[in-house]
Length: 108
Image (cartoon, helix red, strand yellow):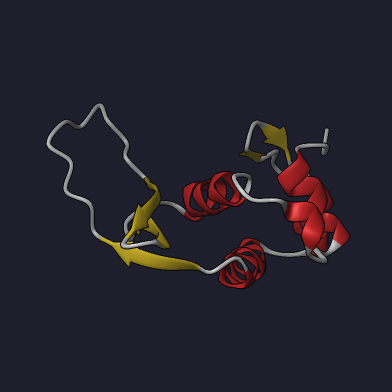
């Protein structure tokens, strides 16, 4: 299996052996919902080809909204959701161990 880099981590089969990328996204989306984060997948027009804007977390009328480029790769979507979740206290909720390790950045 090829090495995959996610959040700066080598995922040479460990997390992907536990969950595939689509399952990881689903789990991250569920976790985001528990924190009240609304995720919106929207096409983001990019004028410069050198820029790769995937999305980001914002506070809109008192509500957290995570906008993600609908054309982004699955890995970029996972990275964007994970980075947004790192802004919250993840210790207050149960997170599957494989997902927690991905978020904590402890996978080598």
